[in-house]
Structures are given as structure tokens and as C-alpha cells.
Length: 373
Image (tube, rainbow, N blue to C red; front, side, top):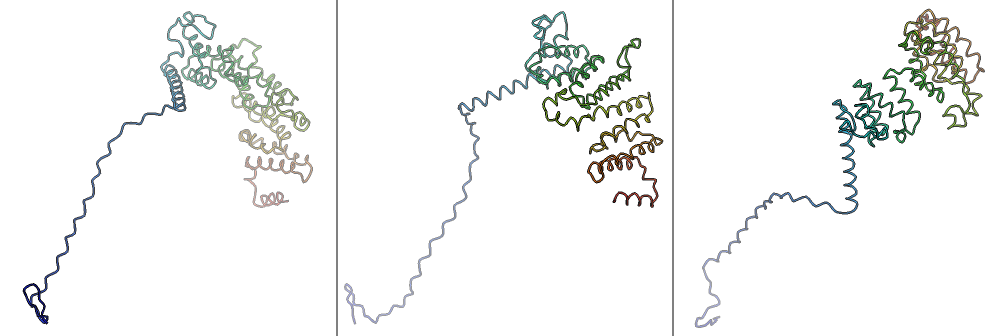
């Protein structure tokens, strides 16, 4: 068969020996793009603070706090340098004395002037102020601080009258006004006869030797009157103390709780203080200790109250002391919790005094069996 292609005749059985054309090469893969290098982030300018009303209030509060801290820091720096808090010149008006000039009074009046400021008039700041003066030994400025405390200038900051009197007593002790401190603690004990801090400080001040030995009427030397005063505080007086005024229910319980622990323990403390000063022997504590156990052996705190004094009892007095306590459990009804409390109190005292450490094994076994019963 022949095909006519243009001017050529091609046979159908024509075979070509030419090699087949090679396939076109695949296009080369494009190289992967290199990772982009991030340019360093430039620090931008701080964003402006929002001018909202809340932000303005916050900034004002921060400014006030910074100002207060600066005032306190400046005052403390002056105290550490030995300067005065308050006015810079001697002719500045004294706010605490109603406008009187402080030039004639010197530095002590400038102390009271500083106390009149809003920052120094706070009770906590005043406490720090007085403590700093005590550390520096500036007695004249302590007297000026006491004068300010006695007046009405610090009244808004000292709403608690007891705290004010307590601070007055502490300052008067520091400057050697023992008689006035005794009067202050006596007035505090009138309102709080069971306060142990007031009791111990009153006794300690009373036992301080007086400076004027020629004054026979000085109350510091009269131990008998002190013991009588302590006894006068032992009975609870209904509605007399400030705590009872705040808690009327104590008046209803006066029959069963009519004795105050503090004044009874004060008798033991008085003998302990006298023995510590060498005026008596520690054996003088036996009688008030027995009385205290008779009154309050049913209290869980009986051993804690007396542990300090039991440790000072002479060995020669231990036997007589424990023999005096032996009948106390039988004064309580058998099988009651009060009887168990008394027995436990005596057992604690016995073991603390080391009596059972010398017992034989047979006696210890006997004591253990008695306790089990």
C-alpha cells in the first residue's frame, strides 16, 4: 500500500532503522529557598500611659505613699544622727504648746513640736520614737515626750486609755520616776487585777531600793503593805473591772469563779523575787505554793503556772510540800473529772521534783498500779 504524502510515496511496509529519540530530560529541581533571616526587633518607645481617671487616681495614691515614706525616712535619719524631729530653727512655733516659742526651751520643746505632726502623732510611730530616744539615752527628750503624752495633743492617736497609761509607765521607769510608775501600775491593776504583766512589774518596781533612804514613808520599802495590796486584789469584784463591764456574764458566774489566779500567784512571785534578791530563802515559797494548789489544782494550767517556782524549791522542802498536797484529791468527789485533774497536777509536780527517780523497782510498780486503778 502506498500513501502519497505531498510528492513522496511512502510504502506501508517501510521500516525505519533510526533510533528512537531520547526522552527529554526532566527539568532540574529548583534549590530550596534559604530561610529568611529575621531582622533584630528594634525596641519600641514605651507606650504612653492611659489618661483614664483610674490611672490618675492610682498615680496620685503612689505619690502620697512616696511622700509619707520620705517624711518618715527623713525623721528617722535625723534621730539616728542625733537631731530633732520637727522644726529646723529654735524660733519655730511650738505646735504642742499652743504657739509658744521654742527658742528659750531648746531641743526638748522641738521634740514635742515634732510629735505634733500628723506622721509622729500615730501611736506606733510614737512608740518607735520613744524607743529610739531610750536607745540614745536622751532623758530630757523622753521627759518632753512624756509631757506630750500627758496632754491632749496625742489623744486622737491614743483611743485606748490602757495603752496610753502603759506607755506612760514605761517612760517614767526609763527616766527614773519610779513613784509615778508605781501609781500608774496601781491604777492599771485597779481595772485589770488579773493582768500578770501589770502584777509582776508592780512588784519589781516596789522592790527597787529607793534613792532617798531617809524617807521612811516610801512605799517601795514596805513589803508588808505590798503583800496586803496583793491580797486585796484576789477577790473578784463584780462589775469593777473593765473586762467584767464588757462581759456581764462573768457576774453570773462570780459565785463559782470568784477568785482571780493572778493575785494568788503573785504571792508566790513576791517570795520568789525576795529570795532572788537575797532577802529571803526559797523555802518561803512553800506556803503560798500550797495555797495556790488548794485554790486552782483543778485548772489544766496549774503545773505551767508553778513550774518556774517548783524548780527553785530546796530539796529539804520537797517532802513537806508534797505531803501538804496529798489530801487535795480527796476533797473532790470520787470519779469526777476535777478529782482526776488534781491527781494529775500532783503527779506532774512529783515527777518534776524528781521524787520518783529514787524509788526502787517494786515501789515504782506499786505506784503504777495505783495510777491504773
